[in-house]
Amino acid sequence: MENQYFSRWYDKDPVLSMSMRTLSSSSDERQISVALNLIKVIIEHNIQDNQYENVEDIMSAVEDGRIQRGHHRWYDIDSTVRTAIQMLEKCPPETKKKVALDMAQIVIEKIIQDDDKEELDKEEQEINLNLDENL
Image 1 (cartoon, one colour):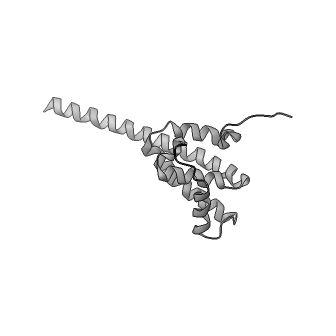
Image 2 (cartoon, helix red, strand yellow):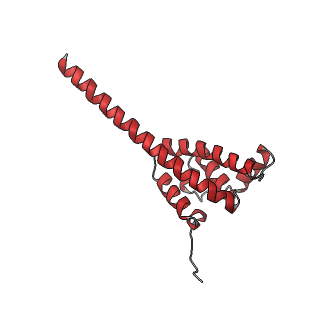
Image 3 (spheres, helix red, strand yellow):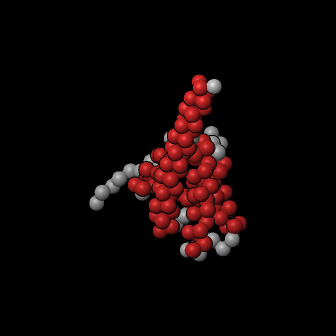
């Protein structure tokens, strides 16, 4: 029997672990965008699985995940990101697995979207420079 030590709750699932590592190294803007999408996905999954009866139950689960001051995790810096991650942590294991796959897809889509936007911004800057030189 393999006895593996996981320092973080999300490292037990390789998909979730990779998504969290990618998200932790992302920009604040990207983290917040992913967190907002993640909250929506978590609520949808929990409603489908009848885990929560109302929004108060969800918020109570989030409040239960708060930690003492002075023990900050990377996702505690922003309240939206913290809420999304705490909601995810409180999900039942089956729901967490489903959400992990959705989260991976959200993170990938957001990275692609941001990269496309950066590329468009660079192209626009080049066009503007060429226009300025020709004027």
